[in-house]
Length: 425
Ligand code: HOZ
Image (tube, rainbow, N blue to C red; front, side, top):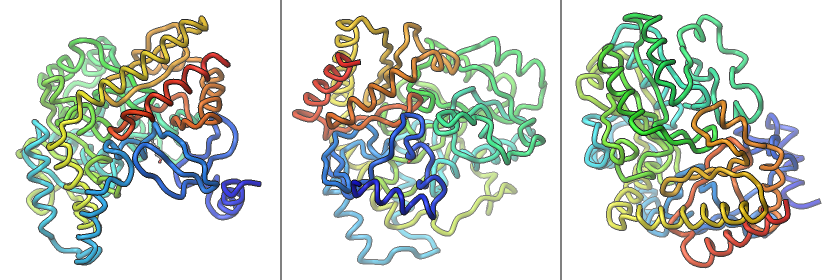
């Protein structure tokens, strides 16, 4: 029995499913998860001492590679001063200044502790601001696990076959309208059927939770226009895409100005952080200025702020986005060439350092077409890659992530492994 297997056996006795987040259990791809004892650069070291080239990057935060020396040094320096104060600290102000400078639509920002908290709070704020109850989300988009948003959700909920979670009261679910991503008519119909009732439309502007899916040309602009027309708050969930697709997220790349934006992952430099921000007029509805309540003991935690600030400053200094896109294209080209040679249909949506591999003949543009991908083939591919030393997200419905640390030998070796793994399918 491997060390990972032993740890998993112990974990299963005490932790539901042996994991603290469902996708990690490998249920969809089969087999048992490995445990990680260290991560540096583009590589994970398992509890058994195997090195794996990592395309999960802790689900996004490690854009500069794991355990970056400057982020580690910033955390160590903050640690000397204490771990949590429960009263404002100077890092919070610096973080807010960086976010407002980098993310075009954000005039004011509130820190919290996870992406789930950010989206949950943004929804409440949209409801409080508009004094309406209904929200619209898109099938297959995943915005964390709060009640209003676990309806036709992607990520682990989809992977494990329960996109509509038990425990969400039907009365809550009725306030959430689900429409297909990239389907203009469906959203127009939702507005027509619920006049003056829709508080917010929340969207992953580039989806990363039923695989990586990009919007049709003009679709985000359409979302901006239809929400403005109906006095509805447009919320971009950029927890994955913020600081990753571009320094200012998808909104900077596509030049769309949402009303609110949710952030997480990269702004914590690998420590637990979320944030939501946007138009000052809306943000000022939050307590203590306004009637919408939201709070958190660890919000603005100095260690997390120090890590995030160091990461954001590095992104400004290095401007790695062209490099990341080149690495992403190298990976995509390798997969497409290998699949073509083998005669296997594949779709590889990719933008910068995010990508997905769908074994499908149909271009993927929404939840329904994502489901057309052959998950059994994906699972064989996943294990073929893992056996050879590459770790992809353990689900056909998660995005892949690259970091600057993949440059050189690691991306070259990973492409060889993708090619060999497809050849063996
Ligand atoms: N829901 C996360 C990916 N979309 C998975 C988080 C984790 O398991 O760490």
